[in-house]
Length: 250
Length: 302
Image (spheres, each protein chain N blue to C red):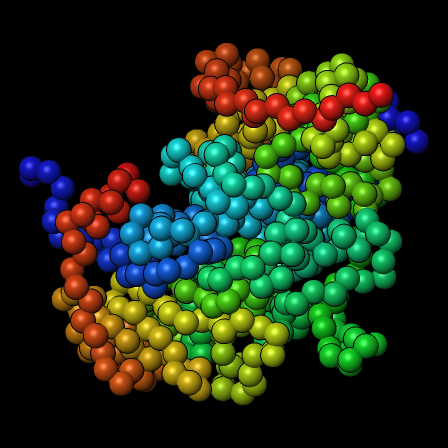
């Protein structure tokens, strides 16, 4: 084969779609992996003033290489600031200084509740996951939240096994977010499409990736997925966008 | 309390005892592996280990049988996967867990450092974490009655931190990611600081902003170059990402893990031997190119 494929992979589609959700944003709280690549892509395109903030206390990282973890010395060299975690979680995140938090999860429900703690029961889990880290307070205190995760009936579930990071309502649909909290999940990006949330806080299909149809979405969702008033069809990422993504994750 | 420059062997023998609560802090950066290995060698048992991210360092201590309880907020091998020794110990009911979020752990150390009865934070509303951990509670504000989540103070018997440099008075300087080390140290009854190098007092006093902890709160200073490997020390050596990846199959297999501990911990008498065993080539590969900061002028006053 000569040169890279012009056909985007599912990961590349997710990175492009997540980057688009960051248009015009100045401050984003990110981890490693797809959200990191999406945020870096956004900074080169739709959000030129974007600064990446890591829970390790690094603000405005300009890494010279792709970091393997959020603890990487390359995130520090050339950054705008480093600070203690007390300042970061207290004065910055809780102080309302973070516009967008990007989170992943093993499970999500229709209200945007995220599980990164256990599959099965807490006391005798079938799978023990890492837990919250900063996700619980990011979900509550960031201005809004973008979730990037892979979609199947195992991850898009009617009831999450554990709510690590709260969405718009408790499982079952009761309750609301506290008055002081941020707006909560605003978008979920998967390999099938992009989901937004209705005024009542329920997830709805907003856009499909190229080549994906609505029946595939329904087959990959553990509840009847609602539709937004119109379901958009995302364009193929341009050649320039694909090249930029491949440079970021190379 | 006056800090004394001492061997790591002596510092652990003097300050760390069976059944204590020990925090080896350092968020992704400056993780005190040399100190952890010395605790393993000295055979401590029944420790409560506190740390935001248990990381490989506590996976090794749990595998070695040092711990009976784990207090944490994110349990994984960063960028790789799981900590299998800890998972096995939890599943076998040999290790009790007490789980928070990052801000919850930060707040616990902050309460501990300031000797407060609890610390309020805006978290946990709508999460199942308070149901899993009854130590996460709520109080009503005496001002407007609004309910807010609170966590209890964490006061380790001993906090161990690793830093780039220190002086003979126990003043300790660190730069880069400083995480929660200052709060964790101020919360503790005893503080051990392990440093990459001992520098002249004038080096510290020429740049006091860089001081993470003054010697007045440090009980022992130990010099252990490369003591945070396989984590990193900003400006001194890089994170050994290959080691973090290699840990996955070692940690997964109890007999391989036991053999690893024999070879790299029990079979060595300290960090100098560990660095020799790593070999000069491996060490040099992790050394960064220089990127010094600009100097600031504090001024000299008459």
